[in-house]
Image (cartoon, rainbow, N blue to C red):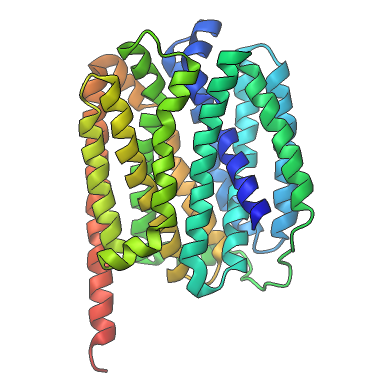
Length: 385
């Protein structure tokens, strides 16, 4: 499990390494902040589509085999990011990374679900989510530090070395060929999407990650507006709220018990998410950083709860279930990491945040609907036959 968690950290680090560097990249290449933000968006686009293929593929091929190939190729692209000069080449490499990272994430989620007993599923997924959170923070914080001390390109080189280590380590984990899974088919995918609980969960995840991705991508530009001292390292540290998510996700099972079930947890978490955005309207650095702690805790509690709940709800076609989850998750991210930037440009930070609040209200209404579905299901099961 240690190799899986280490690889998960690196996968998320690779995805988010450019974010604290966006202001310096915009200045170095003479591009707008919306264009700089595309370094994240262009990776989210294939992330939202490729899992549909990878999730089905995992029903037929070895999880470990696909994971190791993706890790090795990602290491190569990180080395090339260190070397290439034109911004267009950086964009092309990020697009390729966007094809490789979902192969890793879908494989990792599926591997965890395959080797975990059903009763331990929520806890195992919480550890997986904690690793994604650590990766998201480490990628941003370390890249900011390295860029401040040396040059932003060395961030990609260090990550490439780490991925080579992960590739070697993954060669020693047990394979899952003996696990029998359903063969992929459009009927299986349609069956997953026909479930109202699953369908509503995917829609909720799409909305909340749209908001999260928007805030993460444009946070560096807001910090540079509020403070002239906001260099790459300080911007990277502004993502420290991510660490709140680790504590929350690891205690997700306990929170579920205390709150009366995962559906109620998601409703409460999304309500706190909206509160965090309202705090971040205050034009002070402390409000932005403080709001990040609330925002990250709420976001990752929702994420950990949704993944665990889905894998308990559907015990079959796990590759397809998790592939679709990643697709909806990063589909929201692809839109959120780019389009809200135009609202930011035309209506300022306040207009940007209020738009995100409106999208979160949709996510909250979907979580309330999930809670009602759970209540109806428990009432039906408890009624005499």
